[in-house]
Image (cartoon, rainbow, N blue to C red; front, side, top):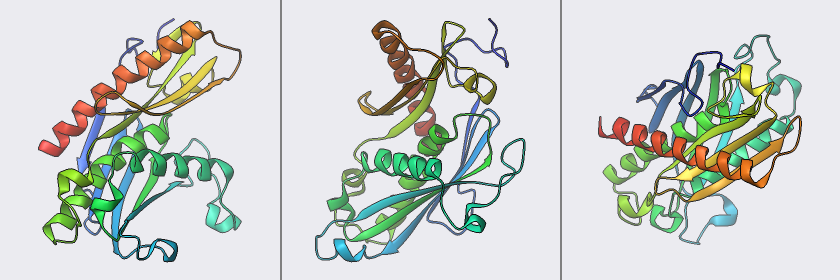
Length: 242
């Protein structure tokens, strides 16, 4: 069965990473996975939360949101509803966990970094695009701290590994990489894989949406996701070198 956009089963969508997209944050990236577009900003604040003061450790957290018309129909802003939805909380925590896996909070010193990931346009894989773009924004924020001599350690010690993420799934019995929305909604199995630049795993989220999956299928999907993350890592490094 052909994919909606004609890609091979193990092929990423076209990926674009535009650094310094916004003029005010210490780090900002507009990342595109096909038609999915996410603005990732990294904001630096002196000091840490009250419960962290005096520890010598920094802090990093993340917030995720989606614009009202990022999807085919308009959704109400959560700020208007007066509460944050469970999905938003879940994705925010995933992004925060993923990025904390690549940073040494002691070398960061008592500084805080907030990663804001705002979905401008959604076509599947918004959380994986957010993680991949947030790493590049975080890299630039750490470089800003180094330039202003605010780090407790060397920049290379602060960001000691990279992180990228991609979705995989099974559609019509075929394992596929980087699902667009049209594939995601009909997937028998849906999974998100978060990897470091050296191929270690930070997190794997897998669900049998319309059925179950075997151990062999799980291994296939994890391997497919790891290869996709390796390709994304190369694109991150290319963007940072540029």
